[in-house]
Image (cartoon, rainbow, N blue to C red; front, side, top):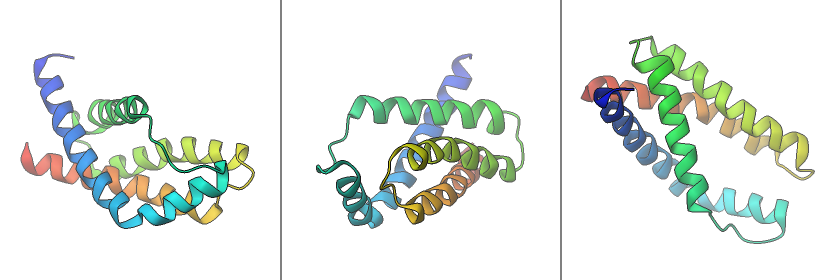
Length: 124
């Protein structure tokens, strides 16, 4: 990655983070309830994990989709794949993991990546 790639990846991180914050703000009660139901304690974020997640997703989206100017359908598919991996693992390993939350978050993964791609293309 050169300096241009790093700057562009930072743009993607910012866009992705803002979109996710908006989504999570409006759905926080549902997530808090499901986290409590599954782990029997309140949600406590590990910010280092949050940071790693956004960096990894942004690098992946930029390198595999945006840098090559691929269609937003590829961004959508990238999001589905990333979120399916995470949510499928949670659904398979956490006994009380809500299927509706998994499905909703799976779809959100595709949408948020494609909207991030759209906004990235608009500001670049």
